[in-house]
Image (cartoon, rainbow, N blue to C red; front, side, top):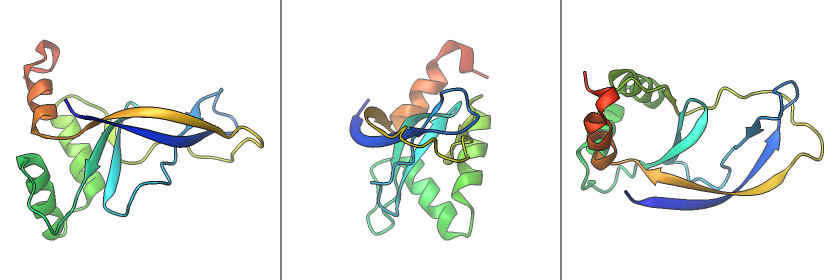
Length: 126
């Protein structure tokens, strides 16, 4: 599995029991993070001007061009594979002053290999 390392920022949110929020401000407009159970797990690049080598990316791009919503597509795809996926974290609120810190996170690049790995993991076979 290909992985990307991000040097990003995080901060604490008031009332969230020391959970860190990762806004990923360094992403381009067509790049997203897929959160699994509210933890940043996958990176997905949706460059509509270039056909992808991966079926899952081409499928997502086709669905987006047909007016579908990326968030709903990711939510549905996650449900299909018994995963709690979203492109938005649920941790929202006011930043705790002076809680900013630099983090280094490794995200798996979301591809057909990701889906194949999930399909072949015993607890996720349907």
